[in-house]
Image 1 (cartoon, one colour):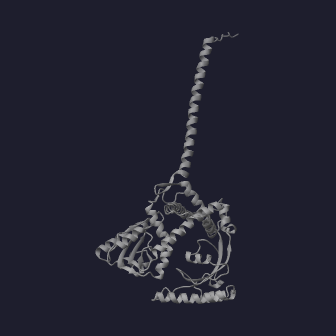
Image 2: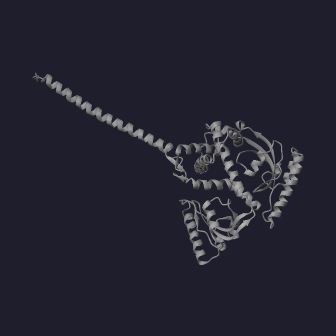
Image 3: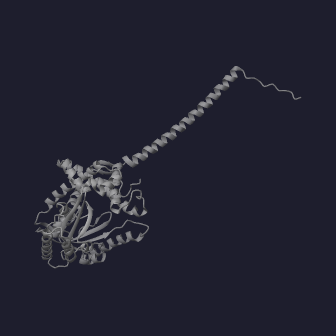
Length: 450
């Protein structure tokens, strides 16, 4: 039988020592584990905080030294995209359709422009002491989010007529005759059908009695929309001049903002009446500053300059068309070298310009202040002597130079100039304000997903 080996027993002191050693080992393990856990939690918290900062607090732009946080931009983008979904009839849940991606990318830049513009408007209103009343906001809210149904007959001004003043007068007289007939019998459908078919120059509505259907704010040029909304339901307007000619308009019906399809669309994306009225407030300010600028600009006669232009589009470099950007730069070089050699500006415009005026040698006629929205370009052309060419003006999308053909210190505004100034007055004002307030896009371009 095997001999049993006795197991040595630990003394009390040895057992205590071992217990203490094991406790120290456990303490080390717990300490290391706790440190690792705290580090991981801290790292996760830092990552979450950093993500939140980048998504919401990080600067999207600066206006007059004030930072516009990215969350403000993202909220505006969400708001603007609802307009896109409404216009394209995109059903809820289909926002990620690949066919929408290019359009949505453009709205990223629109949202950036909108949020910068709102800050500029706030600053300008504050400095001018302008307060928008609740009554003004309510009225604008109805305009912005209500809907209206109209029909019209369009009489165009002959663009090929040598005497544009006479052509304009003839078109206006014809439109006045149409208006008188319709004002005498505004609801005579047969009369609308007959006059639209034989006299309207709008191919999209002439065969349907001039019907344009339901529309929301911003779907028509301002002159047309303002005139339509100024009418009572059923009323026919006097001739209204726009860039397209003379319109005779009837307001057929209106929908309250709370009953409109557009309001329902915004509501489905979580925007309420307060959100829409906050946006309407900025439209009140736009209207105020636009009309103020019109009043300042529409003085006649005034200083004017006769110009020719060469404008070359500068596409963004891309892998799909790698030569387009290089070709644009080569065109610029060709124009510069041609001018240095004495080649006529008109010939260079015909061969190289991307502006529609190229067929006329770049001649864009007489220009007065308010017709060019770029403050730098306007300053250059009015400061450049007759017979000289301005320095090139480079933007993100184009390179442009002007040839100063003539100048006049006192020249009357034409009808077309007046319309162009009216249409561009607010943009003209805004661009100068942005320059004055030193607007900076911290994150230019599309960056909504960052």
